[in-house]
Image 1 (tube, rainbow, N blue to C red):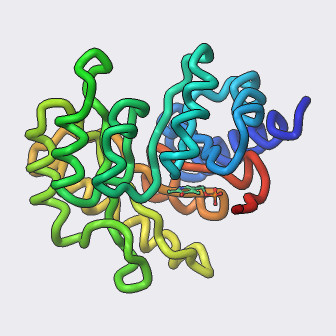
Image 2 (spheres, protein in one colour; image 1 turned 180 degrees about the horizontal axis):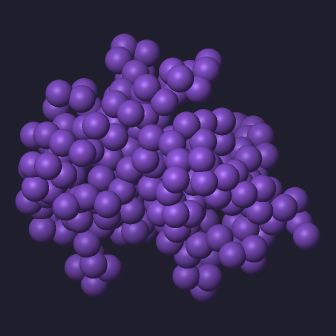
Length: 229
Ligand SMILES: *Cc1c(COP(=O)(O)O)cnc(C)c1O
């Protein structure tokens, strides 16, 4: 077994144990393997071990990687910061974008989505840590942004995403994830049909699953420590 295959199995076991602790069926949480900074060969190893969904954060790195792996028919999720001059390659390359935080970006993604690919699945990124983090819309802006994004023809609004500041204890982590869940439940109560709560990473996936995550985004625990050039 490769290291990546063994790591993947360990992460799946962590998710399964967290689901047991939360009293949730294991099938309600899906695993996004975050392959940013890792070469196509690492993605091939993970795919050979049964992983289908992969997350990338940098457009320039991701586009050639996705092209090199086209024959594997994987599902690619964009999870990084997105500027308006990079929306076209994202709309043309990915099945999902988790990091929509402004209407202008969503409008461009909708305009630039090739119709033959079907709607682009999107999550709105919310800043649940206040001043500590600059990414994501403010919690008070989510409802208006969600109802505007839900109107765009070539997008499908799936849910919310957050990257909370690392919490030093599980109670702090859970509080931040709970903030996102409550926002998500309010949108659902307002009539939006959402199925995705994208939260939890290598160090805090258990807290996220306890607070209702439906997709955890895990990089380091699968591929190892990243080194940035
Ligand atoms: C890098 C990244 C991850 C993965 O983080 P790990 O701590 O390596 O598991 C998850 N989500 C986003 C948005 C990321 O940029």
